[in-house]
Image 1 (tube, rainbow, N blue to C red):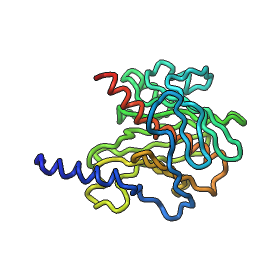
Image 2: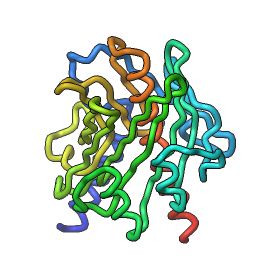
Image 3: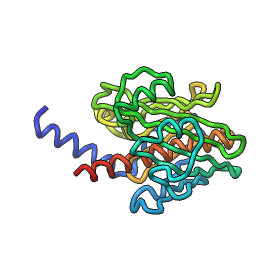
Amino acid sequence: MKPFTIIAILALTSLFACKTAEIPLDPAMKAEAMPVKGRNGLQIGQVIRYGEYTTDKVRRGWTKGYDIPFFLRFQAAKEKLGFTQYGPSKTQAEVACVSKFKSTEIPLVRDFFGIPLEYKNYFAGSVVMREGRNSWDFIVHNPNGDFLRQRASAGFAESGSQRIEIEAVRGLQGQPDWLKELTVYGHEFRMDGKVVGAVSTVNRGTVWIDQRLEAETRTVIAAIATGLLLRTDVEEADLRAVR
């Protein structure tokens, strides 16, 4: 690809990323856009807010003690995020995420989630509801996607027989189709084949959650969406440390 073509692609991508345009949404989903507050800026004392959802101060390194299987399995991971997710009807969930795994930890991912080792880049975590201790484990493989869809970005969250599918969203509203192949701008959440939520990681971020869902399910989706919004911060901090 010629340098001029590369520059043109980057310029067009930046143009759309700077606009208020958002990811395309399924019109059947009954949800309002919730702009994210707290994603940008200092990480010390960071709190994420959107709509009726908020967190406590984000903890990097899991400073709290946990006795949940996921937390115990991945205690040695270097890049970790922890926070309490607050949702509707006074629901609360303890959330812990691992943004990147060492090669020696990937077999643990396979054993824990029962998935094949097709990717090296995973984002995974656990959402534990305060009431009843109901626990959801989630994983997104290849969360950044690959150029021209060479490798997909997808995942799931499970709690017993309940399952939420997580799929990447490429492109923004109004973009040419060829530009939509370039990168992942967010993720959709599906249940029983229907889109019930979405998170855009463009600029400050935006979240949508279907209001027809029960409060616990909405809080679980919010917890995963918050984790995806924070994940990039962890990777960027790691790159700065390497430099």
